[in-house]
Amino acid sequence: MTDWRSGADLSVIKARAELLRSVRAFFYARAVLEVETPLLGATFGTEPAIEPLRSEFVGPGFAKGRALFLQSSPEFFMKRLLADGCPSMYQIAKAFRNGEQGRRHNPEFSILEWYRVGFSADELMQELGELMRELTSESALPIVYQRYADLVQQHLGLDVFEADEKQLAKCALDHNIAAANPNELDKDAWLELLFSVVIEPALDSNVLTFVTHYPASQASLAQLDQDDPRTALRFELYYRGLELANGFEELADAQEQSERFEHENCRRRAQGQQVIPVDAQLLSALEQGLPRCSGVAVGLDRVLMCLLGKEHLDDVLTFSFQRL
Image (tube, rainbow, N blue to C red):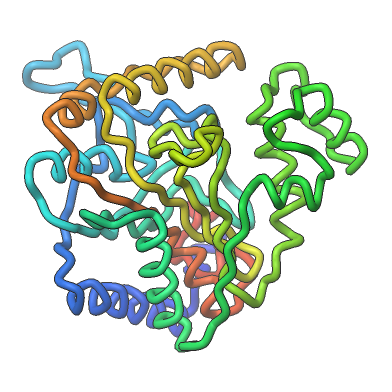
């Protein structure tokens, strides 16, 4: 007999409801507008590390069908709202990614995304830290900031800007890391693998750790750091051994954004992945004008895992992928 029951017991279901209430109260107190955007889109982000779940509409005007994507983030739609004059905003939504399933991944997950008009990446990190302290009820929860390049040097003994694929492959071998298709991995793919396997587990799980200044090649939607254009104003938040958030100071230049999309599609093609149609609607919105802003996406299921001390996403989801 199959197990038809929820993976989350009633106490967890109630804890999720309280988490959502607390998040909404946090933003209500700051006069940040809640919005809702489509889960279906005509296109998808081009980032090679994320694969889309696809759908199709067949109906009036599209008798032969219209290809659609289930969104991995509400980001592009929310930026279109910002360009159209909306103020600082947030959204709680479902998001989807193909090929991700396991202890820390589910193809369908809950995401909190918000954009702060006029905020720098530093100011947004501060606000995210305030939210996490409120959700954990730990007002003095320590916060540390570490640059990506410093972590790579400390834990891998490499200069992230000078290391090439050959050196990174050797580093992986030295750490007994086997890649499924090593000949198809470019520099960023090797870095992402090494960071997740070697560096992430070494971060202090008892503090909020912001990893900042990612290599520019790993931040196609972020502004570059004017003081060091090899890096971008992108950050990720880690806590209790989990990556919880990804954010950045938003790129507003339509031409540069278009070039980055094309570059990522070249990476996808080189790695045998399907090319994604570029989002022309987003580029038009950027041409109209995106206000100076910073945005961040937070994985709410993982936040709930941290709050409840759970080890598997199945413990905090009513019906995870394995229970469908």
